[in-house]
Image 1 (cartoon, rainbow, N blue to C red):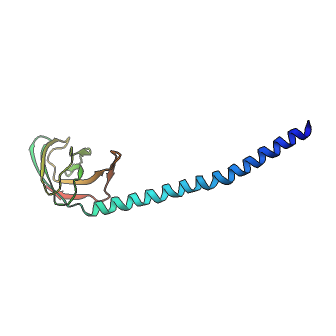
Image 2 (cartoon, rainbow, N blue to C red):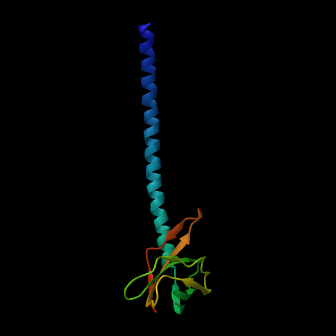
Image 3 (cartoon, helix red, strand yellow):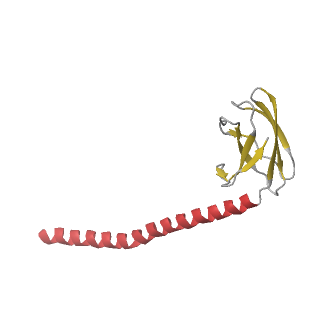
Length: 144
């Protein structure tokens, strides 16, 4: 009876060792693959962001209401986040709402919680295949 338990324990130990030999490299490879994939995604985003040629024209049309015209001279559709500044404060980050088509200006009227803005910052971003925002690291700033 004791030899049966010893054989069972030896078999379980051997199975654990074999499982560890197979499982550890598999887990390590997944980790390496994720890091490499994340790095290539950042490289792709950097390349896309370098191709962005986004310009802004802004005019205040009422108390805190602004007409914003974004001009996309790049070759891809791009989305944008906006922040307005005056000498004392800045607005919340607002999404321009929808993409700005390549080679086509788009104008929207937006309500900001700031009056008398003298500068706008525009941060371009892209939407990836999963519907997630990939925000460019560069921001374009224009005096109003």
